[in-house]
Length: 463
Image (cartoon, rainbow, N blue to C red; front, side, top):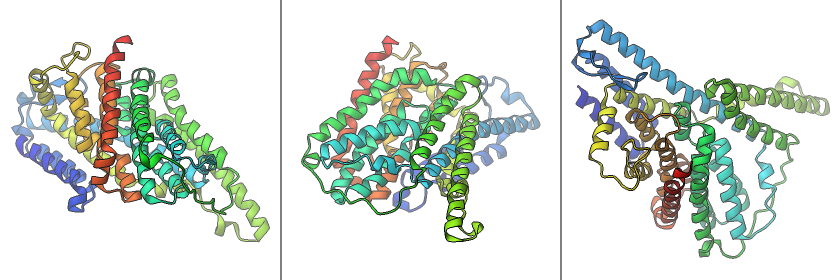
C-alpha cells in the first residue's frame, strides 16, 4: 500500500510539472493526489508497520501493536494536525493577498509609476530590480511581480524590450522574497513552522539575496537590450485617486507589522495578518464611503447604486486556485510524512550523499543536498520540496540548514521560467516563451544563485 501511495504522489507531481503540456491546471492533480493519498492510508491503516509522530518528529515504535480503532484515531489526529498547520499558511496568504488587492482598488501602485520620469534603459532596469527586491520582501514575490509587470506594461511600449525587463524582475523578486518571512511561500512555511526567525533570516540571507539580485542586474545592464533610451508611453488621463498614496503606505505598513506582532505576542503570524487586514479594511471602507457620499451629492445618484465595498471586491479577486494548490500539495506531502517515507529518505540521503564543503552545523546534511534542492526547485515546484524538507530534517530553530534551504528554494526557481510562481505569472502576463527565457535569462539567474550560495557559505560562520 505504501508503494501505491508513493506512485500516486509521483504521478500527481508529474502532472503538476507538465501542466502546460497536458493543459490541466496544477491545482487539480494536487487536490486529487491529496485526497487519494489519505483515502489509501485510511483504507490500508492496518497494513502499515510505522507511523511518524509529527509532534515528537520521530517514528513511533509501537504503531504496529495498536488495534484498528487506535490507529484510526491516531490517523485522524495527525490529519487534523497537518490541516491546522496548512490552514495557518493559507489564512496568512489570504490576508496578504486581500490587502494587496485593496491597495490596488485605490490605485495605490500608481504612486510608483508616477516616479518614472526618465527613459534610460539601464536606469529603468536598476529601478525595477531594486523595487522588485524590496517589494517582494513586503508583499511577496508573486504579487510584486504582478504589480511591477503591470506598471512596466504602462510605461514601455515595445514588448521585445519589455520581456527582458520582466526576466530580471523575476530574478530580483525571487531574491527579495528569500530573506523575508513574508516574501515567499516557502520562506513563510519555514517561518510559520518555527524553523527560522525574522531577525536571523535577515542576518543570514540579506547579503546573499542582495548579491543574487545585483550580479545578474549588473551583467544584464552591460547587454545590448539595456543600452540607450526607450520611448515611454504617455500617462493615461484617468483621474488619480486621492487616497492612493495613503492606502499604499498603510497597506505595506500593515503587512510589515505582522512579524513585529508575532515577536511581541508569540501568536501565529496569521493572527497578526488578520488584524492588519481588519485595520486596512476599516480605512478602505471609510475612504470609500467618503468618496461616494461626495459623489452622491454632486450627481444625485442613489448611494446603493454607486457604492461597492472594496473589501468584497478585493476578496473576489484573490488567487483562489493558488490557495487550493497549496492546500493539495501540502496535505499530500503530509501523507508521505505521516507514513515515515520522508524521514527514511532523509536518513538514507544523509548517509549516502557525498559531502561538499562544510557540513551544516555538524548535523551531516551536506551543502550539495541543499544546492540540489535549489536546482530542483527550478524544474519542479519549490513548495512541495520545502514541505518535504520540513518532514525530512529535525534541526532546531535558526539552524543554518533552514536558512540555506530558504535561500536555495527561493532563488533557485529563477533558473527556469516555470520554476517559481513569479516566473509562471510573468510568463502568462507577457507570453514569454520557455526557450527564450532558457536562452536569454537562465544563465543570469544561475550566476546570481551561485554567487549568493557562495556568499552564504562564507558568511554563515560569522553569525
